[in-house]
Length: 351
Image (cartoon, rainbow, N blue to C red):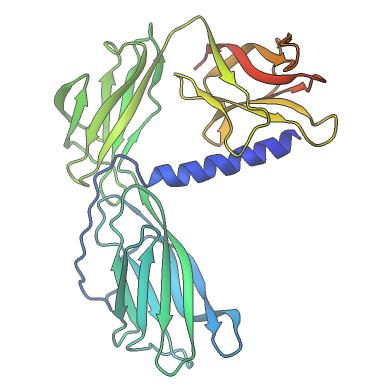
């Protein structure tokens, strides 16, 4: 059952992450210049992807290589790299005047026609993240169309080493700045807003800026960073941890629905709960999972967990205590006649 729970959690986290990535706080460049569709840009492209042909006569679909597209990976601010579409005729020669429609998940779309070289390109100057795009190709005299779904991945040009520390530590935070081709931004001034004050700081020969960590209070603080070469703006999270034992409480739904109740910890980890009331006797019970994104907790050492069960008729409460947690998942069996309603977790922060 532990495996089933983990798969469910990963699926939910994946959907959330896909939604959140498009809303990341980065500046957006939407340059729509169409410079030479037949000119092939120096794109950072993944292996060739074949498209699917939809036959309107037979209502069948099959893979076809007459239209070639790629997944594109590039850095923010790289306007030269575009999404390329290559169309061939039945003899493998470049196909002129093919109608190519290009659209994104957000609803924006654009249509172009291939030139003599059989190619067409579309600007993909998006926010940092992974973006789903769709291509549809149609030819005169062909009763069908070619379509493909691909991803355009925009990488950040502002890359901090995880900025988490204990309040007593005097370590320095490191932020790496890159140009729009992914190379270190050497000896250039970048802008950082730290604790409300704007600073211009020069990167070193490796494109790195070092920041003193003193002055940050316990909890979470945001540093605003700006890369003047790529034009990217990004909020960077600083987390200052307190030593000692901490306690949080998380509700438990009876039964758990599609969303898993969770508690976000100051160190960036989460405590997720699920109550499984069906399945075999061995599977029924409460599951606590300690997560960081789609992986296990990184900065949390669990010391003790208490699960509270209540009898809805009598109001009597039973508490199950666990002082040992193996791995990232804790399971407590169902108590007959009782329903779980909350969990209390005692833990320490760890580096």
